Image (cartoon, rainbow, N blue to C red; front, side, top):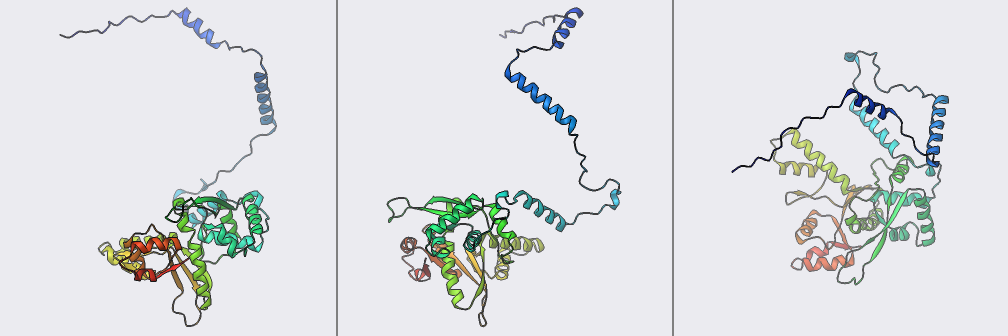
Length: 351
């Protein structure tokens, strides 16, 4: 049985013309408020704004862009290179150097600090203390304080991983460039054309690993310079991966029928990178240098190994022929993972 509880439509109440007129008159009457300090303040602000607009008419601004007088079919198209230049200009304006850095004079140690931190993205402060400042802690602290006040450098403390030897959490201080610091370094014009510099942290969880790349570079750079190499430049894996991916994409686009493995082999040969187990092996950093007479290679690839590497990854890095480095604590953990292949540990250098 169905019950219908719907109500019948009730006739709407119609207001008379006089009633509607009275309501409209009531709405037009402004509401009066009691005189308070807040209302007096608002009224004074309105009067000041009206007075300012009266004596300061808006300036005439010409509209940017193409002139409307030029016919559409005769307008010049903007080339991609011009778009790139315009984009770079806007980017530099967005990341302009702060006013407090205008006319700033940097000491040689401060310039070296900015360069080293920019080349490797993140560097431990204790490494700067041993290399650039030759153990002068007070001078390093003063320079870092000055660079932080100028907005050029940031420092932060990070926790290191725990292992069997560490009973407490070990903390280290690392330094990175800010965007204004990176721009100042570029504008000084002292960078090599092939050298890129970076600002900020990309992967905070990998700070411990990334901060050890600079240590491996110092040992490898000393060996290269002893063999006659000079004018050292650094390419991090960010840059190498980007170049490799672009080359693979271009090759697949030009010849879609070509197998991907064959494309990877060609790209690996193009960038002088090892091709192991159907994968292009990319090092943590590539050190480029001007070789002395008789040298056959103009670069060395370095890799920092940590306890997080699994055995298969370690074997790939060993077959790649990189200059592999690891800390003393990581070497102990790695040796337990590859007990069946002790020859791999012979190729791992200690940081």
